Image 1 (cartoon, rainbow, N blue to C red):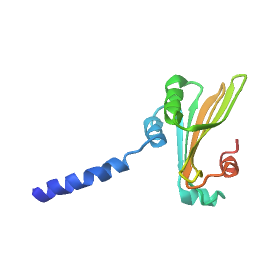
Image 2 (cartoon, rainbow, N blue to C red):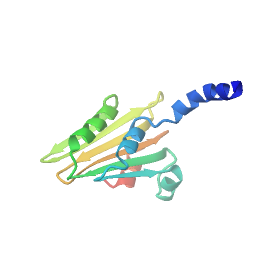
Image 3 (cartoon, one colour):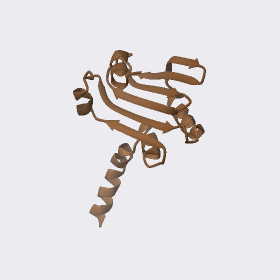
Image 4 (cartoon, helix red, strand yellow):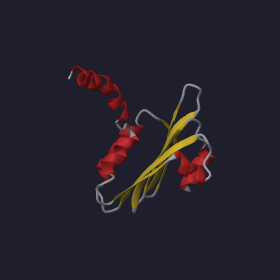
Length: 142
């Protein structure tokens, strides 16, 4: 019994690390909701698509127009609130925002692209060690 308790106590920090954070929580929250589409691409899949070694994961969520977008938009804003705004474009009913987070060396390690128009809301998250905007553009064709 003591061994079991010790094993559980030692594994608690590891279980906390395994919990999804940020965009991962968003994927988990919306993956089973009607009107939302979620996508997760691994490093291996990204390589087959021609992405550089700097990108390790891509996740995306799309909400169609029939969904109440307020909560989804607020969730995206909460995730990006401490990120650097690289681009913000508002034109008629469409918006495009690109946010980034850099590591200590100044390399982009996370990129969030958030677009909204009259038809859908899309949020794309790229994580890695050195993300280049031209790689992101080739992956998501924006």
